[in-house]
Image (cartoon, rainbow, N blue to C red; front, side, top):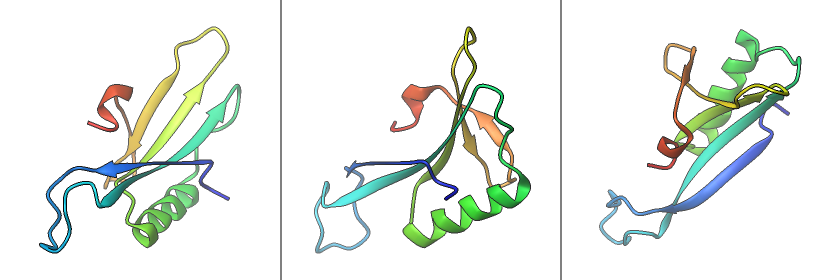
Amino acid sequence: GVVDLVAIRRDYREPADRTLKRGDLFEIILIQIKGGGAKKPTQADKDRLLKVKRKYGARRVVLFSWKKGEEKRFAVLGRDREWHDVDPEQLFA
């Protein structure tokens, strides 16, 4: 599949449905991992990731990439279908 990991936590934003309370819903982030010399996701992969995001109501699609001896990188898939670097602490901000 195109998604390697799913991160889930409680969503403490005010829900639109007034019968729900803060923390009743979940925030979902889809993560694809690329390591070593693996190629970045193709345009078709990005399209698939966005379809899965819509299907499950995920908040973000994240690419985690690493190479031995280099800094790890987190990027978010934007509406423009491009990867935008992000500080990992901002992912669940």
